[in-house]
Amino acid sequence: MSFNDIFKSGFLESVSEFSMIDTILGMTIALMIGLFIFIIYKKTLTGMMYSESFALTLVGLSLVTTLVIMAVTSNVVLSLGMVGALSIVRFRTAIKEPVEIVFLFWALAAGIVIGAGMIPLAIIGSVMIGVILLLFANRKINNRSCILVLNLRNEMAEQEIFGILNHDVERYVVKSKTVNAAGMELTAELCTKNANTAFVNRIYGVPGVENATLVSYNGEYMS
Image 1 (cartoon, rainbow, N blue to C red):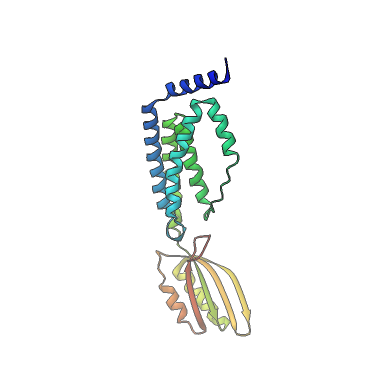
Image 2: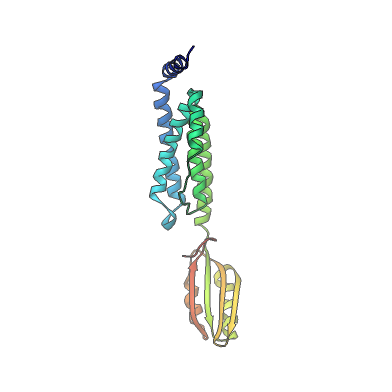
């Protein structure tokens, strides 16, 4: 048997094994899970961290990966060629947030699992991952940590400020204190009570306070 005969027989065999119903079902499930990943990404990353193009990429990545795995699992020759082709691919997309790597691998894994025919595993796994990410995202949103920066002229003002903080915030920790000839700069991390910031006005009214600044803080950046 010649190489052409082997190629033709392999080609005809792969065509005969092609199932339109399985392909449509797999691509539909991949689209649904991709949209689910899109929604979770949109809910967990907001503001400047959210990227519309990256969110759409997650949907497309689920579909493309599913299509590739379906083709690879149906033909050994194609799978070897795909490995060789992917070995020269270089991904240079900049990842702004570490959590985006999770969504990227989630979309890839969902496409691989669906393409392999394990649809229940893809659905159950995606639901569990989505719920876990939402729980941690809500915990992060409920975090009321802030950074308080004060410029003071004397030590008496500092003692009165500590009294206000003990009464009006849940907890606070002094992060830094800088003293110079002009006075002192005090930085404290604190957690407000029910997002109430009226205590900043009272601190500014303390004699000896030149400036009082309160900024929100999520452990990664200030806004």
